[in-house]
Length: 124
Image (cartoon, rainbow, N blue to C red; front, side, top):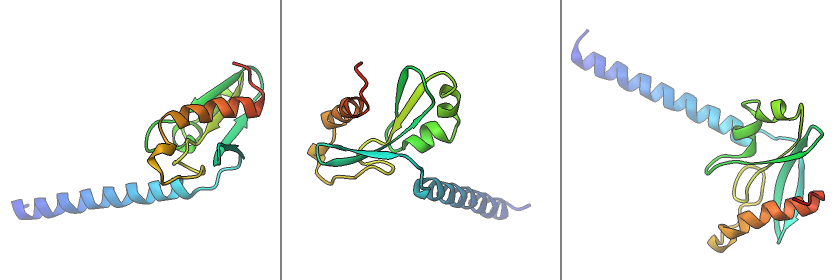
């Protein structure tokens, strides 16, 4: 195989991988997960609860959501065998509201977790 053909083949393989990754991301980003919402200082925050027992709150990382980080890999299912697992979509992510004001992020995201605990009656 010539060098030129190898480069074209490599380019098509990379393009194919990128298209598959984009399709999977679009599928999981638009999937509708059941759950509930609560109001956190005017921002609607999505969360799910699974299992019973002592509460465990799962907070996902940047550029993700609770579905991608916790539900899809089976983390919530595994933990729900022994705990009450609460997974929230941070503001700006997943099914939660996405405020455009940068001041609505940062410390407000910490307050969202505290407000969720208050909403669910979790003391600490």
